[in-house]
Length: 236
Image (cartoon, rainbow, N blue to C red; front, side, top):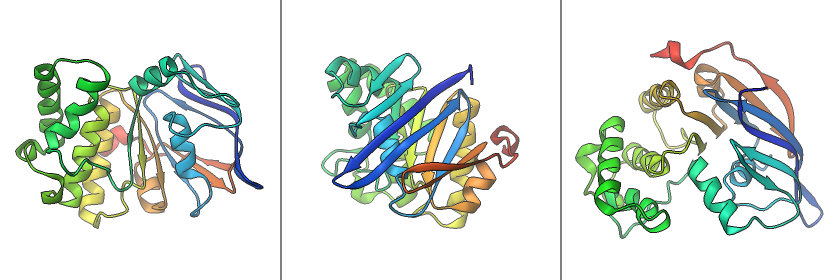
């Protein structure tokens, strides 16, 4: 796949005698919306965490654009900073800082990790809030946000440094059917704007409706690759 933004090759990770990931290998093209599916404990979330540089792995290699993570040795701070410019992650339970407003949550990494001036970070945050339909919640505290609003703020936070790759863990877990459709349309807009998305999900219907590709994971191994025959750009 010559236009791949993301490549995993022979990625392995164990905890004690248990193999969490066992030779995981796949590539994701720019502009793909890939769903990773499998039962609980199959390794879906761990795959996302290794890509984001949050989980060290024992063997293999992960390449995101021009940044390379290698198994068997901890990544240096320079590599971790580089990978976090390339990858944004939205966690299943959002993990917004409860003591910070929505806009402060989104500005935190650009200002404190990347040294972007606060006014520029706020402009970027407001642009994202408008695009995601939550501009009216910029000053709200996380406890006052609905589940769907918190998810969109978390997406804005992940996009605040303009990464080409967005990872999402179980994005439909707390959404009703109408909100699931809204999320699918939102993800399609992000793809149309040039993002590449990888989501871990149990939601078969959502994956087959919106994903361009579906990867099946069982016991830490990618065992199956489906093409649902859908193009997210045609869903709009």
